Amino acid sequence: MHQNPVQPLIDQLSALPGIGQKSAERLAYFFLSLPQADVGRFTETLTHIRRHIRYCERCFNLSLSQYCSICEDTSREANVLCVVAQPKDIGAIERMRQFQGRYHVLGGLISPLDGIHPELLRINELQRRLSEEPVKEIILAINPTVEGDATILYLSSVLRQYSVTLSQLAYGLPMGANIDYTDEITLRLAFDGRNPIQGAPQ
Amino acid sequence: MHQNPVQPLIDQLSALPGIGQKSAERLAYFFLSLPQADVGRFTETLTHIRRHIRYCERCFNLSLSQYCSICEDTSREANVLCVVAQPKDIGAIERMRQFQGRYHVLGGLISPLDGIHPELLRINELQRRLSEEPVKEIILAINPTVEGDATILYLSSVLRQYSVTLSQLAYGLPMGANIDYTDEITLRLAFDGRNPIQGAPQ
Picture (cartoon, rainbow over the protein chains, first blue to last red):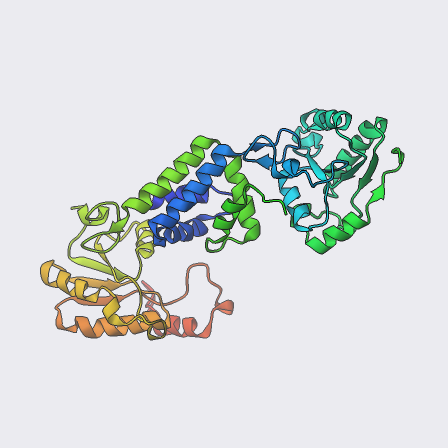
């Protein structure tokens, strides 16, 4: 059988998530239709970001340098911390253009079935920040799912010993929704309606 | 507003056909989750193929060298030519593992509304091949669309002067089709092209 010269590219594209055989073919032929300079710009962007991407050493957001641009921004409030599961969630919250505090990325949610136990999340790092930074309020911006609820429950018991106000986003979010996919207005309502957590210090 | 360090990659991915904003984000974060070596292999494949891809000088299939692997394959029959619109179509026909002849890629279909007139297609090149190669049969494997029909009509008048057998692919029901859901034109073509059943009384 004839070996299509484009096949290696199609094969690698079809290994990407959400890209089937037909989409991979379409993408491959699209790349071939682009000027070489455009393809070069794309591969350089991909290579550069993949090579230099790292976690912010303070909040664990994605960053191209030691600290992310939010941690470096001295105009952001240092006394409000928004705790999220993934760096992606920060993008959604920033698009809301309302939250002026800083972030802390847990790196996941508690999910014993998937082997994600609390010690795998950056909770120790969060506690260290609470003892070093002038944090007065923590907003848990965590997906309203089983794993999210478990994580909120765990965090609220761990954080009880600190004199911070702990709140979670309002359930303006429909159950099962994903913060990453939520529109800005719903997200803003959820921020505005955040509720104190029962039993936590107010 | 915080500049997501991954944004340039997301922007370039979302410019690809069939990739929306959310798919672009998912792909970008997937690339970041891959080992650098895998990303390097991908960008090298893309760069290499884009840099070296060209048209076969005989049949205008895509190739990484002067002639494509099908034209270089001396075991392929030189007297049957399959005419297709695009290099992609060759892949589908090769997967059938039945056709043993060679190809000729027109580079499109006649479509006056899109400004694609016959002289933009590689019809002169086809005629030159007919005078140089021992072609006895031409199979037009052209999409059954308005543009395809126009192209078949035009080619059949141009090729009339050559002593070659000219055929086009059969129209009819695709395998697995449901007659109930088949459009009228396909059904009519399937009726018109009905074939006698082997061994049944005629």
